[in-house]
Image (cartoon, rainbow, N blue to C red; front, top):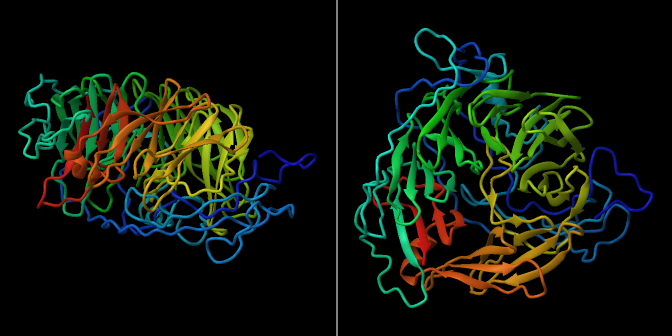
Length: 605
């Protein structure tokens, strides 16, 4: 929706986010960490990373147990700020009409989802934040006051006993030949060495059903559970992180592609997407004590399993901590986001490229998102003043030069990016219990906002210590269209194709089964979607033409009924479609010693 004729945009914002209750993708509830004492700092090194120092392993602190799903939805909102009634005008989700949106436009429609469990969509916590890092829970403030000294922004090298500076070091790992079982369904034991198939997932496979190519069981995790973030597929390898390890499997049969990479402490962040040359970066904790930080980095080649450069990220200035990191790949650049700043490095060598620090009127960069050659930065500005607001910027990934800046109206928080190229952002307003989806042109101009009266259900993980801009799946986009799944408490849902030019629905397709359907990706003019399994049928992978007048589903894979129960156990797992194979993996391990958890499953013909 564009601005009305002869009406300048309202101060401090773009477009017109709608007064809609928050849906999936908000921030999780803050948690209060133990008091910390300042760690000893090593002077920053110039030019890149060295090898991180090891820390003796110790039992990790307990994590919060998952919560049970709780449905909760709202209704279309009331008239817009110019006095024109919206087309529906129903009361808001919280028992009263909502106020006009912040950008001088009419309101749209949306429905909230209640917080559910780690990895599920959740609403923002109640109340607003007036801290210098709006969008970060107050836990950062308390921990920072207790833990941080004023130190320089940058990196310090974890070098040898002499304390000297080192250039990036490529730490090579062994790359043995495959030793896995020849059985096409190969569960492994969490360390990539294969084994028998006690579940016999292909038994009774019916004509036309795909095969379970292989599956893997998860490594042992503590009783409090552990994260299993990331899943990256190359032409030859499927790579998965879990707890303290990264595993690589051959895509066709699940045999180990290389020896597992094991870290001294648990993995705490990963780059959500791989680079064009199949590199990722993993962050892991510095220890298990109250002073431990998520500041140890390791670059990994997904094809060979070899470790490249490694290093330690230093805290920034006061309140700018590495309690958590956000890792983003933008072209050939790695952006490491702290709580109030970011530092960019050459992904291939680890050489420092630039810092993204506080700028303007108290604008603190708090989150980043990356694409093929795009780097998006979101900053919290004037958090304690009268002009409190977020700002979106696009940076040149190689130099950090600002390509454009787009302020957001006061009261609205940029919570997620549903797409980076084209740029589609999801915003929330805690005070109004509202949400908005806005789209932008290549040069940062407001393009449109979603104006569809629907409950949408992308799968967005918790964002507790960071915004996690790229933490959603189940949403896809191409140059002209955004694809969002509708929510359905039972039975089939729909995927709605929304025009980025108008924000209106262009077409919609109903799930071909009595289960929900989720967008996966757009490739070759087709939208690929995953139809979730039921108690008596496996899931499906389908394609939908994105152009023309016939938008119907074509089945690419029908997963076997014999594996439906296990497939369904990967609730809100990471999913991908590549090379005619469908992959699904866990994103959280429950640490239950009574059963062997499934880590990853691959289907194909």
